[in-house]
Image 1 (cartoon, rainbow, N blue to C red):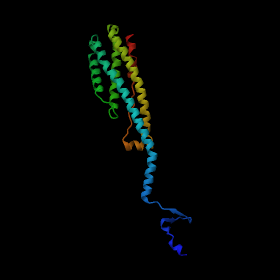
Image 2: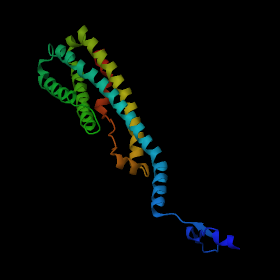
Image 3: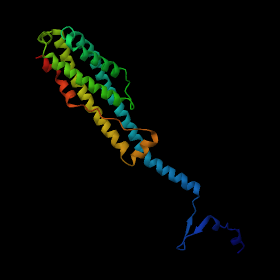
Image 4: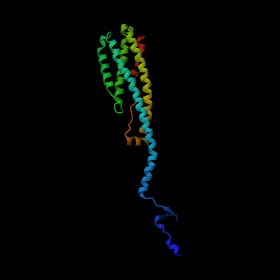
Length: 215
């Protein structure tokens, strides 16, 4: 019987449940740790997905920049040839040059890509006007250097259109993740924002067929 008094009493380590059974107690600290671990398990995949989409969008934006630079590098060559024949279009030349300089000086990122897209649409529109006006200058249309430059410009425009489609697709995926719950909460926590789409107006889209004006 004396052995009974040597058995450790464990009643202090358990709490009696409402149905007559016993359950182990969990301290508030352990409960907080458990909740944090569960939250990390749930949120980490969203974090990884957002980072992947952000990097994909930045890659697409870099592709846009590469193609736009080709356009910006080509425009001075076109204007140099055109100025020999189109003396009355000086105002249009100056406007294109101003827009080109402003757009080329912008380093694309989440905060500046919207402004660059706006300027580029204006450039495409003005270049479209220039191509239409070429119709009034038969000698310019017959200039071999001008024809080659305009053909190259049309090819660059096609590459820009392809890069724009890839960029818009990446932006669509990212914006959905940023704006839709619950990944929107993670995006807000780590500072990932929506990106603007690269949209063009009808005049800008028509400028892609620049070579048609030299036929």
